Length: 361
Ligand SMILES: Cc1ncc(COP(=O)(O)O)c(C=O)c1O
Image 1 (spheres, rainbow, N blue to C red):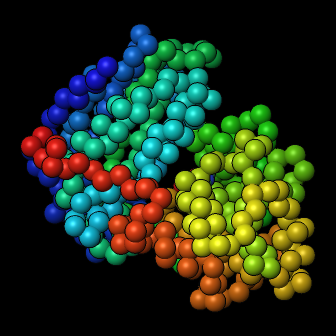
Image 2 (image 1 turned 45 degrees about the horizontal axis):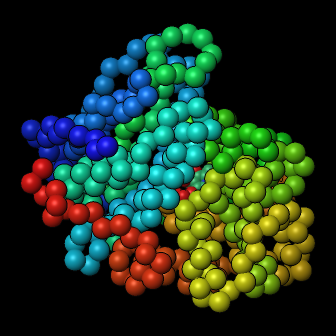
């Protein structure tokens, strides 16, 4: 079944108000947004409209009980100037995994992709071509039933907006490894991209930021021992030439698309990659033995963020200079080149937005 998307274009683009040579992350919004509503078992009123505010009811259940999920992906321009999106099918899949965990309806891939293609075609001038910049795409869904009481909502809204962004972490990050607060535990919602996962870490994150750190590197919620992930990134360590990243099987870690891409690229380059439990003791021991070569985070926003330093139980551990981190620099360069269509897309990761098909919208 096809979903019809109605289109209302803005009368006045505000693109000239944005300085594309000075883009900040998350502060600029393109001219249009997509919206669809769900009730009686299906999506309806699918529409693209001018970006802007909308009215909500004070008893909207997502505001009170957090039945709300989101995604984050990016589009760039390839060398022919066409917008390309990096692995959007993985985001659709993960969105629907999050939806399932939060008792929310699935968004069919056909609707999701059609909405993305049309929205980005209409706002194609917003896809930056300046270095280190891209169009960030934010799909999200929230419960819209109006009642007070705890049960899954039966009404939902699915939306997508976009905005041009620059670098997320302009320099290597300092992370704090917490031995008090935890983010996720088996049986919980760690693997879902639900809003509550982010709300719950605001206070501990604010605390460590006051101490001069950028993010928390979370340890597992039971033993407080095994690495999980960083605020908005998966984590990798390189010990003695072996690339190690925490395994996903506990359901506590987000199945990062950059993580998966780095693993596949690393294997393709002939490196040994291990997805397994990695304890903080192993990392600290490797550090003292001079075998900890690298630690970095991966995520859509930052792609690869090197860790300059980590803190654990009162000690700061400084990592080798970023320039010398050969493996991660090489993988980052290749991934960045693939994402912008500058290196061969050997894995078939790029989705080219069919602007010619929708150009007359
Ligand atoms: C908690 C968390 N972990 C990891 C990631 C990285 O995932 P991806 O590479 O798909 O952006 C993100 C960002 O989406 C995140 O929010």
